[in-house]
Image 1: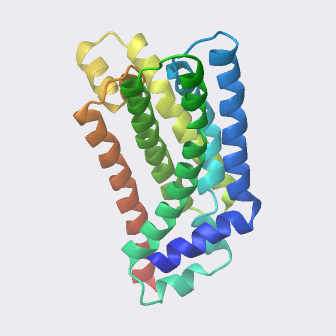
Image 2: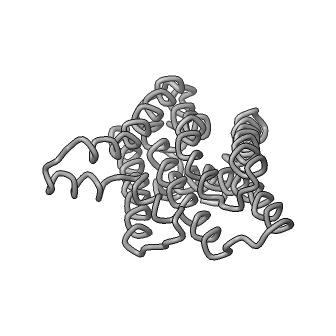
Length: 235
């Protein structure tokens, strides 16, 4: 797994993809931070990270579109499938490389609470909850993107399909306000990625939400491995 992880991480920064993802993330977060916190003299970071849920829909496809699609397109996937490396190691190496780039971008954003702390006393527990929530939501989105990448050899299709799915997930909140049937509302609320994230932006770290994000992440990593396993069996 370490070899795959190192190769993918090098690939992110030997090509523009890693720089584009981190650069856009920093640029957009800085722009939002300027308007929601600096200009309004607001110490609450929940507005910043609340808006990032929409921004992240556009950034995740950049990070995940090539991870497996490129292997299929260049036929290097066949080398992986016939290598002694386990499918679990292959998939986890690729996924953890994407997670690492995301964590790097998230770490840079720590400059915002530092700036706020120079002029006010922010709620540290709330900031920690926000970062935990955004990290969990981020790895969930990334795992979905990696799975989509495993279904096609076309990077553009992978990116568009990932964005479409993440967009639909963000529409679930709207559905819950439209549908009046209580049971349906409860099911939609349970499946909503963004509604669970809202708890974190309010400073609440709920165990069921943590388990939900980790379970969805694990499920899509498993499904990605299953796609690999099917192709290895066909070989």
